Amino acid sequence: MSNSDNQDEDEVRIARFELDELELMVIDVPGSAPALDGLTTAERAVVMLALDGRSNKEIARDRDCSVKTVANQLRSSYQKLGVNSRFELAAKVLGTAGG
Image (tube, rainbow, N blue to C red; front, side):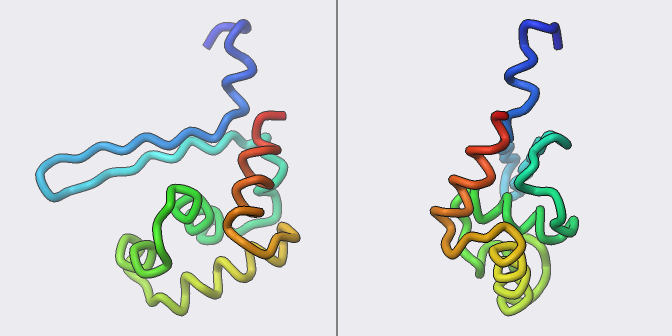
């Protein structure tokens, strides 16, 4: 990217690709997104899927884990980020990712 695109480098970006019954999601989370500091890799993944609008059940299916595991990872993420809902989560993560 050129220097004129620097503001875009700090944005969280999600791209989806579908091929037959296979869906691939690519999530680009800039290392400088301060809201995600302190989250584990698993928590980051669950947070990004939640921000994509997926239910706990869908996230569990996609990550091949239990719904309870997803709920625990989201709860832990909420505590670490100081939020109480997916709406607050989106405001915190997407709002701070832009700088």
